[in-house]
Length: 310
Ligand code: CUA
Image (cartoon, rainbow, N blue to C red; front, side):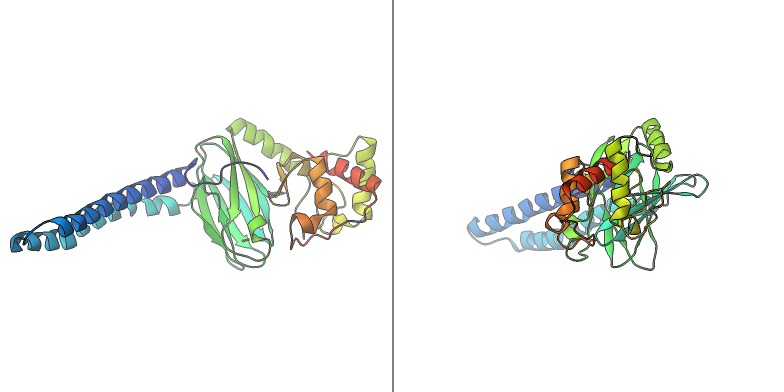
Protein backbone atom coordinates (compact mmCIF):
# COMPACT_ATOMS: atom_id res chain seq x y z
CA UNK A 1 0.00 0.00 0.00
CA UNK A 2 1.31 3.41 -0.88
CA UNK A 3 1.46 5.56 2.22
CA UNK A 4 0.02 8.81 1.02
CA UNK A 5 -2.65 10.78 2.79
CA UNK A 6 -6.12 10.06 1.49
CA UNK A 7 -7.65 13.15 3.00
CA UNK A 8 -9.86 16.00 1.95
CA UNK A 9 -7.77 18.19 4.30
CA UNK A 10 -4.68 17.57 2.16
CA UNK A 11 -6.18 19.66 -0.67
CA UNK A 12 -4.10 19.69 -3.86
CA UNK A 13 -6.68 20.62 -6.49
CA UNK A 14 -8.96 23.56 -7.21
CA UNK A 15 -12.18 21.68 -6.44
CA UNK A 16 -10.84 20.14 -3.22
CA UNK A 17 -9.54 23.54 -2.08
CA UNK A 18 -13.04 25.01 -2.59
CA UNK A 19 -14.66 22.08 -0.80
CA UNK A 20 -12.20 22.29 2.13
CA UNK A 21 -12.79 26.05 2.36
CA UNK A 22 -16.54 25.56 2.44
CA UNK A 23 -16.08 22.91 5.16
CA UNK A 24 -13.99 25.28 7.32
CA UNK A 25 -16.56 28.09 7.02
CA UNK A 26 -19.51 25.76 7.69
CA UNK A 27 -17.80 24.13 10.67
CA UNK A 28 -16.59 27.47 12.06
CA UNK A 29 -20.12 28.88 11.75
CA UNK A 30 -21.65 25.79 13.37
CA UNK A 31 -19.25 25.98 16.33
CA UNK A 32 -19.89 29.73 16.82
CA UNK A 33 -23.67 29.26 16.73
CA UNK A 34 -23.46 26.28 19.09
CA UNK A 35 -21.46 28.36 21.58
CA UNK A 36 -23.99 31.20 21.41
CA UNK A 37 -26.96 28.85 21.90
CA UNK A 38 -25.34 27.00 24.82
CA UNK A 39 -24.30 30.35 26.32
CA UNK A 40 -27.89 31.59 26.13
CA UNK A 41 -29.19 28.35 27.67
CA UNK A 42 -26.74 28.64 30.58
CA UNK A 43 -27.69 32.30 30.98
CA UNK A 44 -31.39 31.38 31.01
CA UNK A 45 -30.83 28.77 33.71
CA UNK A 46 -28.73 30.92 36.05
CA UNK A 47 -30.22 34.35 35.44
CA UNK A 48 -32.12 35.14 38.64
CA UNK A 49 -35.55 36.71 38.53
CA UNK A 50 -38.12 37.39 35.82
CA UNK A 51 -37.13 38.14 32.20
CA UNK A 52 -38.47 41.34 30.77
CA UNK A 53 -41.17 40.42 28.16
CA UNK A 54 -39.53 42.76 25.61
CA UNK A 55 -36.14 41.05 25.95
CA UNK A 56 -37.75 37.62 25.58
CA UNK A 57 -39.62 38.64 22.43
CA UNK A 58 -36.47 40.18 20.98
CA UNK A 59 -34.49 36.99 21.68
CA UNK A 60 -37.12 34.68 20.16
CA UNK A 61 -37.64 36.75 17.01
CA UNK A 62 -34.03 37.83 16.69
CA UNK A 63 -32.38 34.54 17.60
CA UNK A 64 -35.07 32.24 16.20
CA UNK A 65 -35.90 33.92 12.89
CA UNK A 66 -33.72 36.90 11.93
CA UNK A 67 -30.32 35.43 12.88
CA UNK A 68 -30.75 32.01 11.13
CA UNK A 69 -32.13 33.73 8.03
CA UNK A 70 -29.09 36.00 7.78
CA UNK A 71 -26.61 33.20 8.48
CA UNK A 72 -28.20 30.63 6.15
CA UNK A 73 -28.55 33.20 3.36
CA UNK A 74 -24.89 34.11 3.82
CA UNK A 75 -23.78 30.48 3.62
CA UNK A 76 -26.03 29.86 0.62
CA UNK A 77 -24.56 32.88 -1.20
CA UNK A 78 -21.08 31.61 -0.35
CA UNK A 79 -21.63 28.00 -1.49
CA UNK A 80 -23.96 28.30 -4.51
CA UNK A 81 -21.48 30.09 -6.80
CA UNK A 82 -19.10 27.12 -6.26
CA UNK A 83 -21.46 24.67 -7.96
CA UNK A 84 -21.00 25.80 -11.58
CA UNK A 85 -17.21 25.73 -11.07
CA UNK A 86 -17.34 22.19 -9.70
CA UNK A 87 -19.50 21.00 -12.61
CA UNK A 88 -17.97 22.96 -15.47
CA UNK A 89 -16.47 20.72 -18.18
CA UNK A 90 -12.74 21.12 -18.77
CA UNK A 91 -11.91 23.48 -21.67
CA UNK A 92 -11.75 21.73 -25.04
CA UNK A 93 -8.28 20.42 -25.77
CA UNK A 94 -7.78 19.38 -22.13
CA UNK A 95 -6.32 16.01 -21.29
CA UNK A 96 -9.04 13.33 -21.38
CA UNK A 97 -8.98 10.15 -19.37
CA UNK A 98 -11.55 7.38 -19.51
CA UNK A 99 -11.78 5.39 -16.28
CA UNK A 100 -13.98 2.32 -15.83
CA UNK A 101 -14.72 0.68 -12.52
CA UNK A 102 -14.33 -3.10 -12.64
CA UNK A 103 -14.73 -5.52 -9.71
CA UNK A 104 -12.24 -4.60 -8.00
CA UNK A 105 -9.84 -2.49 -10.01
CA UNK A 106 -9.70 0.48 -12.40
CA UNK A 107 -9.34 0.37 -16.17
CA UNK A 108 -7.66 3.60 -17.26
CA UNK A 109 -7.42 4.82 -20.87
CA UNK A 110 -5.71 8.09 -21.73
CA UNK A 111 -7.16 9.55 -24.90
CA UNK A 112 -4.27 10.63 -27.13
CA UNK A 113 -4.32 13.72 -29.38
CA UNK A 114 -5.65 11.67 -32.33
CA UNK A 115 -8.30 9.92 -30.26
CA UNK A 116 -6.17 6.81 -29.77
CA UNK A 117 -6.36 5.03 -26.42
CA UNK A 118 -3.34 4.53 -24.20
CA UNK A 119 -4.26 1.76 -21.77
CA UNK A 120 -3.07 1.43 -18.20
CA UNK A 121 -4.66 0.43 -14.89
CA UNK A 122 -4.90 1.30 -11.22
CA UNK A 123 -2.68 4.34 -11.50
CA UNK A 124 -3.43 7.81 -12.81
CA UNK A 125 -0.75 10.36 -13.55
CA UNK A 126 -1.68 13.98 -14.12
CA UNK A 127 0.16 17.13 -15.17
CA UNK A 128 0.17 19.84 -12.49
CA UNK A 129 -1.82 23.06 -13.10
CA UNK A 130 -3.73 21.67 -16.07
CA UNK A 131 -7.44 20.88 -16.27
CA UNK A 132 -8.30 17.21 -16.84
CA UNK A 133 -11.58 15.77 -18.03
CA UNK A 134 -12.51 12.33 -16.70
CA UNK A 135 -15.12 10.19 -18.41
CA UNK A 136 -16.36 7.64 -15.94
CA UNK A 137 -18.36 4.45 -16.27
CA UNK A 138 -18.61 0.94 -14.89
CA UNK A 139 -18.39 -2.52 -16.41
CA UNK A 140 -20.44 -4.27 -13.72
CA UNK A 141 -21.92 -2.64 -10.59
CA UNK A 142 -22.00 0.95 -9.31
CA UNK A 143 -18.60 2.21 -8.17
CA UNK A 144 -17.62 5.73 -7.18
CA UNK A 145 -14.50 7.56 -8.32
CA UNK A 146 -12.92 9.69 -5.61
CA UNK A 147 -9.54 11.37 -5.21
CA UNK A 148 -10.14 13.23 -1.91
CA UNK A 149 -7.09 15.48 -2.32
CA UNK A 150 -8.15 16.64 -5.78
CA UNK A 151 -11.93 16.96 -5.77
CA UNK A 152 -15.38 15.55 -5.17
CA UNK A 153 -16.59 12.03 -5.83
CA UNK A 154 -18.63 10.95 -8.83
CA UNK A 155 -20.56 7.69 -9.23
CA UNK A 156 -19.58 5.25 -11.99
CA UNK A 157 -22.78 3.74 -13.30
CA UNK A 158 -23.12 0.76 -15.67
CA UNK A 159 -24.54 1.79 -19.04
CA UNK A 160 -24.11 5.49 -18.44
CA UNK A 161 -21.19 7.89 -18.67
CA UNK A 162 -20.59 10.46 -15.96
CA UNK A 163 -17.87 13.08 -16.00
CA UNK A 164 -15.61 14.98 -13.67
CA UNK A 165 -13.23 17.85 -14.14
CA UNK A 166 -10.17 18.07 -11.90
CA UNK A 167 -7.42 20.65 -11.75
CA UNK A 168 -4.46 19.52 -9.63
CA UNK A 169 -2.47 22.39 -8.11
CA UNK A 170 0.36 20.61 -6.29
CA UNK A 171 2.90 17.99 -7.39
CA UNK A 172 2.72 14.86 -5.24
CA UNK A 173 1.40 11.35 -4.82
CA UNK A 174 -2.17 10.95 -3.62
CA UNK A 175 -4.59 8.13 -3.17
CA UNK A 176 -7.91 7.53 -4.84
CA UNK A 177 -10.61 5.17 -3.64
CA UNK A 178 -13.86 3.56 -4.62
CA UNK A 179 -16.43 5.42 -2.53
CA UNK A 180 -19.46 3.21 -3.15
CA UNK A 181 -19.80 -0.24 -1.58
CA UNK A 182 -19.42 -2.65 -4.49
CA UNK A 183 -18.87 -6.06 -2.93
CA UNK A 184 -16.29 -8.15 -1.17
CA UNK A 185 -13.09 -6.32 -2.12
CA UNK A 186 -14.58 -2.80 -2.13
CA UNK A 187 -12.16 -1.66 0.59
CA UNK A 188 -9.26 -2.85 -1.58
CA UNK A 189 -10.36 -1.01 -4.71
CA UNK A 190 -7.99 1.94 -4.60
CA UNK A 191 -5.56 3.64 -6.97
CA UNK A 192 -2.49 5.83 -6.92
CA UNK A 193 -2.55 9.34 -8.31
CA UNK A 194 0.73 11.00 -9.21
CA UNK A 195 0.65 14.71 -10.06
CA UNK A 196 3.81 15.58 -12.01
CA UNK A 197 5.46 18.63 -13.60
CA UNK A 198 4.12 19.00 -17.16
CA UNK A 199 7.31 17.96 -19.01
CA UNK A 200 7.75 14.85 -16.83
CA UNK A 201 4.13 13.96 -17.46
CA UNK A 202 4.57 14.33 -21.24
CA UNK A 203 7.58 11.99 -21.12
CA UNK A 204 5.65 9.51 -19.00
CA UNK A 205 2.64 9.51 -21.36
CA UNK A 206 4.91 9.12 -24.40
CA UNK A 207 6.50 6.05 -22.76
CA UNK A 208 3.09 4.63 -21.84
CA UNK A 209 1.91 4.94 -25.44
CA UNK A 210 4.72 2.69 -26.64
CA UNK A 211 4.41 -1.09 -26.88
CA UNK A 212 6.04 -3.21 -24.19
CA UNK A 213 9.79 -3.56 -24.07
CA UNK A 214 11.02 -6.92 -25.33
CA UNK A 215 12.82 -8.76 -22.50
CA UNK A 216 16.64 -8.86 -22.74
CA UNK A 217 17.76 -10.65 -19.58
CA UNK A 218 17.55 -14.49 -19.75
CA UNK A 219 15.23 -14.78 -16.72
CA UNK A 220 12.86 -12.20 -18.16
CA UNK A 221 12.85 -14.00 -21.54
CA UNK A 222 11.99 -17.25 -19.73
CA UNK A 223 9.37 -15.35 -17.74
CA UNK A 224 7.63 -14.19 -20.88
CA UNK A 225 7.23 -17.84 -21.94
CA UNK A 226 5.92 -18.71 -18.48
CA UNK A 227 3.40 -15.88 -18.78
CA UNK A 228 1.96 -17.46 -21.94
CA UNK A 229 2.33 -21.06 -20.72
CA UNK A 230 0.06 -20.45 -17.72
CA UNK A 231 -2.52 -18.60 -19.76
CA UNK A 232 -2.02 -15.13 -18.21
CA UNK A 233 -2.45 -13.65 -21.69
CA UNK A 234 -6.08 -14.80 -21.77
CA UNK A 235 -6.94 -12.04 -19.29
CA UNK A 236 -4.08 -9.54 -19.53
CA UNK A 237 -2.84 -7.50 -22.48
CA UNK A 238 0.80 -6.67 -23.03
CA UNK A 239 0.84 -4.43 -26.09
CA UNK A 240 3.33 -5.49 -28.74
CA UNK A 241 2.96 -9.19 -27.84
CA UNK A 242 0.27 -11.80 -28.44
CA UNK A 243 -1.18 -11.12 -25.00
CA UNK A 244 -4.44 -9.36 -25.81
CA UNK A 245 -6.71 -10.32 -22.89
CA UNK A 246 -9.20 -7.67 -21.84
CA UNK A 247 -10.64 -9.17 -18.65
CA UNK A 248 -7.85 -8.01 -16.34
CA UNK A 249 -5.58 -4.97 -16.16
CA UNK A 250 -3.33 -4.06 -19.11
CA UNK A 251 0.23 -4.94 -18.05
CA UNK A 252 2.19 -3.25 -20.87
CA UNK A 253 4.09 -0.98 -18.46
CA UNK A 254 3.33 -2.81 -15.24
CA UNK A 255 6.87 -2.39 -13.89
CA UNK A 256 6.50 1.41 -13.91
CA UNK A 257 3.52 1.36 -11.55
CA UNK A 258 3.75 2.12 -7.85
CA UNK A 259 1.51 -0.65 -6.61
CA UNK A 260 -0.11 -4.01 -7.29
CA UNK A 261 -3.74 -5.17 -7.09
CA UNK A 262 -5.37 -1.71 -7.08
CA UNK A 263 -3.04 -0.10 -4.52
CA UNK A 264 -3.06 -3.04 -2.13
CA UNK A 265 0.67 -3.90 -2.21
CA UNK A 266 3.72 -1.81 -3.02
CA UNK A 267 5.12 -2.87 -6.40
CA UNK A 268 8.29 -4.87 -5.78
CA UNK A 269 9.39 -8.41 -6.76
CA UNK A 270 8.58 -9.96 -3.34
CA UNK A 271 5.07 -8.53 -3.31
CA UNK A 272 4.44 -9.52 -6.92
CA UNK A 273 5.42 -13.12 -6.13
CA UNK A 274 3.07 -12.98 -3.13
CA UNK A 275 0.24 -11.60 -5.25
CA UNK A 276 0.60 -14.33 -7.90
CA UNK A 277 0.77 -17.20 -5.40
CA UNK A 278 -1.42 -15.94 -2.52
CA UNK A 279 -3.87 -13.82 -4.46
CA UNK A 280 -6.88 -14.63 -2.33
CA UNK A 281 -5.09 -14.03 0.96
CA UNK A 282 -3.88 -10.65 -0.24
CA UNK A 283 -7.25 -9.66 -1.69
CA UNK A 284 -10.19 -11.90 -0.78
CA UNK A 285 -12.69 -11.91 -3.61
CA UNK A 286 -10.20 -11.00 -6.36
CA UNK A 287 -11.21 -12.49 -9.69
CA UNK A 288 -7.66 -13.52 -10.62
CA UNK A 289 -6.96 -17.23 -10.12
CA UNK A 290 -4.36 -18.00 -7.49
CA UNK A 291 -1.26 -19.72 -8.90
CA UNK A 292 -0.17 -21.31 -5.62
CA UNK A 293 1.37 -24.40 -7.22
CA UNK A 294 3.58 -22.49 -9.64
CA UNK A 295 7.14 -23.93 -9.52
CA UNK A 296 9.52 -21.45 -7.92
CA UNK A 297 11.72 -21.13 -11.05
CA UNK A 298 8.70 -20.23 -13.15
CA UNK A 299 7.48 -17.79 -10.50
CA UNK A 300 10.82 -15.96 -10.25
CA UNK A 301 11.08 -15.81 -14.06
CA UNK A 302 7.56 -14.40 -14.43
CA UNK A 303 8.24 -11.81 -11.73
CA UNK A 304 11.43 -10.79 -13.56
CA UNK A 305 9.51 -10.47 -16.83
CA UNK A 306 6.68 -8.37 -15.39
CA UNK A 307 8.94 -6.08 -13.35
CA UNK A 308 11.02 -5.14 -16.39
CA UNK A 309 7.90 -3.96 -18.25
CA UNK A 310 8.70 -0.32 -17.45
CU1 CUA B 1 -15.88 -0.32 -6.38
CU2 CUA B 1 -16.50 0.02 -4.13
